[in-house]
Length: 110
Picture 1 (spheres, one colour):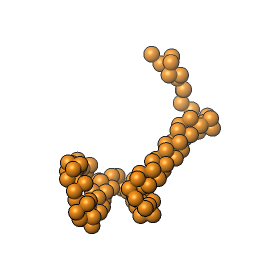
Picture 2: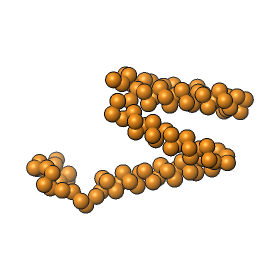
Picture 3: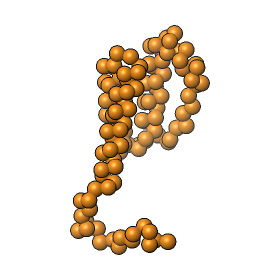
Picture 4: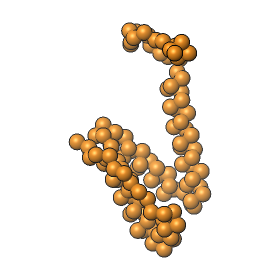
C-alpha cells in the first residue's frame, strides 16, 4: 500500500548551492531522502518503475565529470523519453479489434 501524496518543499536555491559546496555528502543525502520520500508516496504499481528510473539517473550522474555534463546527458535522456512518449501517442498501429468504442474525431466533438 502506498503512502499519501506528499507536498515537498525545497529550501531556497542559494541554500542548496551552499550545502552542495560546503557539505557534498549532506547534499547527496538530502537529495536521496527527497527522492525516496516522493517515490514511496507513489502508487505501489509505479514504485518499481520509479526506483528503476532513479537508479538510471544516479548511474548517469555518477559517470559525469562535472555538473554541466550531467545536465546535458540528463537532458538527452529526457528528450529520448519524450520522443518515445510522442511515438506511442502518435502511433499508426491503432488496433480497432481491441476496442469496440465509437471514435469521435476531436474537431466534430463540439
